Amino acid sequence: MATYTGISSEAFRHPLDRQAEQALRSLPGFDFVARKFVEFFAERPQLVYLMGNTIQVGPRQYSTIYHMFRECVRDLDVYPEPTLFVEQNPQANSYALGKEHPCIVINTGILDLLSEAEIRAVLAHELGHIKCGHTILIQMAIWASRAASAIGEVTFGIGNFVSQGLLLAFYEWRRKAELSADRAALLVVEDLNTVMTTMMKISGGSDKFANECHLQAFIKQSEEYQALDEDGLNQIYKFMMYNGVIGSMQSHPFPVERLHYIREWSNSEEYKNIRAGNYMRNPAEGAVDVKVNSNGGNNTTNSESDQLRRQLEELQREIDRIRRNQ
Image 1 (spheres, one colour):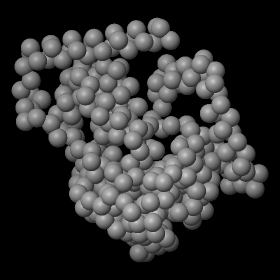
Image 2 (cartoon, helix red, strand yellow; image 1 turned 90 degrees about the vertical axis):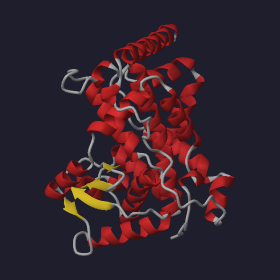
Image 3 (tube, rainbow, N blue to C red; image 1 turned 30 degrees about the vertical axis):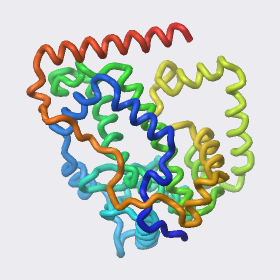
Image 4 (cartoon, rainbow, N blue to C red; image 1 turned 90 degrees about the horizontal axis):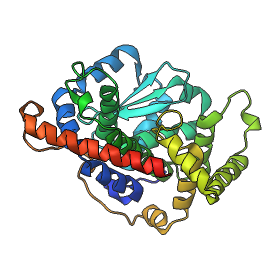
């Protein structure tokens, strides 16, 4: 396996990830949500919960997984080393969280469904989120979404300030962030087919009928999905599905779309240069943080709150206008 000593997340970060983050941060209301998040959110309870309810992976607990994990940490040059947990859950899922105390959680559904090489791809994907500094914004997005749908007093008043437009921007960024993490997986496992079979199995794989799932058919499905865009109405349907107009908002790109993006990048000069050792090196932490101005949320004046509310209402009206015209 290749080791990318000193690699910067900017070496492989997807440009759509970077653009979506910039768009999110520029929206009215983002700084307010960031202040509230910093004021009330704490990482330590999450760590305590995981320590009490899952298995912490180590030299004598899931030793095979631990060895693979340590190799992935080394290969992506992730520091400090996150803590890895296995949670009893049949859903094939995994996630990363935390900044001061970064953690990765993989469900038993992942371990039961995937091969060792595919599990390595999942571990590298989640480490890619940590390497890129995604975890704080992901947690902020989840927190803001829950707060927006709850009672104002319970959510410290944030529910009054989170517009649909801001939530749309959070979810758009989350989807694009997955593309960067997929690139991290490919860099570590060095095999495109392994990354793609991982996506296929998580989409609808079955351990019992694994011999009846074929990657080439899934790739063909991905190509046919892309071809749907030739009909402008299908593009509208995709937009509506991603953004909760039809169904619920999607936090991840559809797997067949992720397949398209990672296949495209695997043939790029950028990928080949990184594999050859020609990549941006930077020992600094991930690019994403939640630094805001020094005024605490409790010091926001009524006039500032009114102004922010008006800005959010104007943005929401614009979102509604765009939807009506589609």
